[in-house]
Amino acid sequence: MNSNNLLNLLHTGFRVSLGATASLMETVQDPQKRAQSLSELTNELSQKAAEWEEKGEVTEQEARRFIDAMLQQRSSSGSSSSTRNSTVTEPIATPTKPTAAPNVQQEIEALTTQISAIRTELEKLRQSESNS
Image (cartoon, rainbow, N blue to C red; front, top):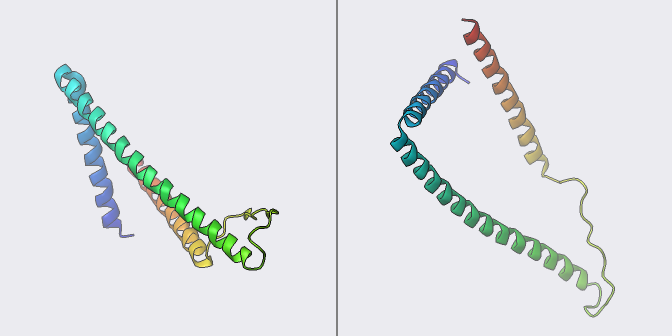
């Protein structure tokens, strides 16, 4: 990561924090603005909650269809070797460990390592700035 990009990112973050703090102080000091801001925040939160609920519902339906398809595929492959009218059912074996493709697992580990390195770098920068 380029140090100029990191410094620009930190500088932008500082400005955003400073602006947010100034806006918060203005809102706290002015009762009319406070009421307006709370009303806007409540409306935005309600909209987001509705969007998230809708997205969750769609995701739940997709997951159910996926699971149903997997179970149907498993039962149809099992029924080709046995009769359909059989009353004995076999338990479905579930893996005890999540299985991921090896390359996906390696990518996750690489990303985790990168995140750890970035955290360490940020911590060093914070310490060097606080010592300055």
